[in-house]
Length: 176
Length: 193
Image (cartoon, rainbow over all chains, first blue to last red; front, side, top):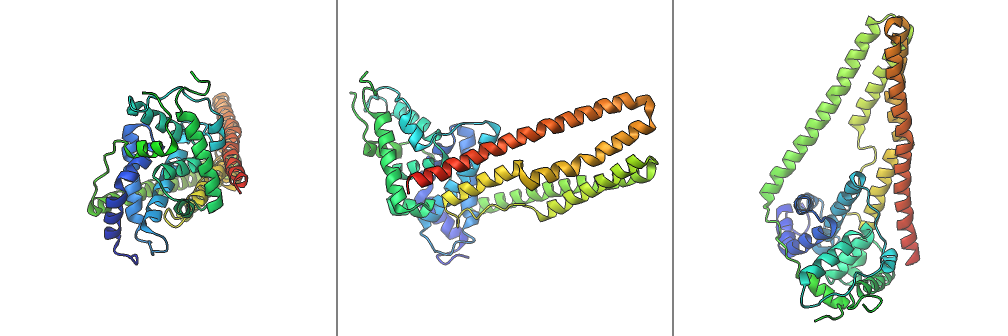
């Protein structure tokens, strides 16, 4: 049993507080709806099991995101064995041509699709950072989850902003 | 209206993603975990059972066939099956780090290293060495003592050896692919230091 409560209590609290974020996280790792549901179930199961060992050395949020990202990373690696995919680093994503203009208010669905397509092509580590950034997580929390230094995280956040600005600015790179 | 999506707008856009959070109780998860544990146990029993059947059958072959090569092949296969049984009991060869205790970068690296080592190094070569020489020697012995069907056996052997020869570079290529991803990860960490 963990210091902050029983396994069941901890899981219920984490699922209640971060359930929606975990669902969004699964979107970042799996495009197919059925497989995404399976991944989400796998994450919830791993989360519940993990609370057996939770000793409160980090926050509930850090623990929850760590478990979720680690399970999802294993999922991506397993999937890439069956279906080899070349992932992009943030540095490579910066070099990618943008996809043309985005109608900010007209088609948010299209913007979601484009954002997800970008995230799902990233290397797992950069994907974790991108998802944490979009969830509005601060650099210290991101560092705790990923194990990178805060300085590293700031550099990565800078790159994430560059990638997003380039990919989502109106009119495309050549002013189309 | 067309306009720029600033990174902060994208954070809002991201949070608007239509989600349907999973509603699952700890009791359901407990049942699911138990199901999973039983499934793993069943797979382990089936794997162990198959290896034991291999031991029994090849032991019978040892006493059944008088040809020396066939006998050596049988013994090697029995030893190989026994080795697989030991591996099955001692697995995982390289346990995954804890999903909650381990930070994501370390976990990702460990997962890539585990995949790489599955395709190269002692675990890969031991699998090959364990399953190949015994049956090959047995087949050679069989061809010696049954010249009337020797051609068929040689063909069969050739197919096995060709498949094994293909498996080696394929696995090494996969190992290199994982190594490249580890290198990319290391380079990415270095570039932001």
